[in-house]
Length: 391
Image (cartoon, rainbow, N blue to C red; front, side, top):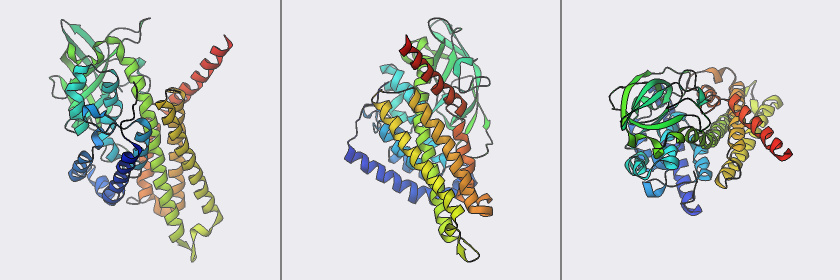
């Protein structure tokens, strides 16, 4: 799967400026509304569609903006600055679901689905996680059995982002036990209205209000051979791993954006709130917390940009994405925690941005591969590379 630059630096600067303006002036003031209503208002969704945000990472030939991964992370830095539900609306279209089609779909599959995905007419949902198979898909239990020219899918998925509003599920299912040929996992395109597809109630989560997830059950769901991604049973595991690796860089950038917002809120509060008549920002212990936040944000931003560059050049598509996600999501958690501390009791109150951020960023260390999985990926690949040199 390759990223090709389709947008010039000048054009991208304009896209980035428009995105930042949209986030800061249209979305940020309405954060209380998003949290209270547990949804992104329709007018903001429509604005995002008009700006091309539902397909910013989809190639232009399929109706998207055609941004590469280095440009993707710059947008993600902006999306992270507000409620993460905004990014969640179009995240799977551009990311883990859309990229499976871009990288592994047949020409017919791309022609059928990518344009409506890019425009936001179709919301695509990535149905991988299930009980017993989360960050590591090798434990997958959902099965697809061939029946003539069709496939019949049975199984259950959980925590599936955008499932309640999805039009298309990108479903991972086992077609055979893992063997020397591969993991035995295939990927299928399953319309949400296919008989046997059942979407559960919306999950009640700790945070990320407005970003909807739910269980999805597949009971004797029949799809034609054209639904098999890439026309091959053996694309599934590689498609999942490649899409998740690319997505990890995006999540890392999102975490840096959220950490930047937590830092900005902390600095503003420290400069204006007083204790005994003195702005708390004058106190050295508060300054130390701000310094730790600033160092974390700067390090995270540099790391995620480097990881994106290495993905684009294909210099490193294994260690760098995992290292970036590990560091940036853990960093965002520390920065959000310090932001609550800087705010004191006010930071624990609903309606204060850092309280929302504190809850929202906790999920970033779990989805698209937990921190523990990232450590295993980084560590095992370093050892593998060292052993290779010794041979």
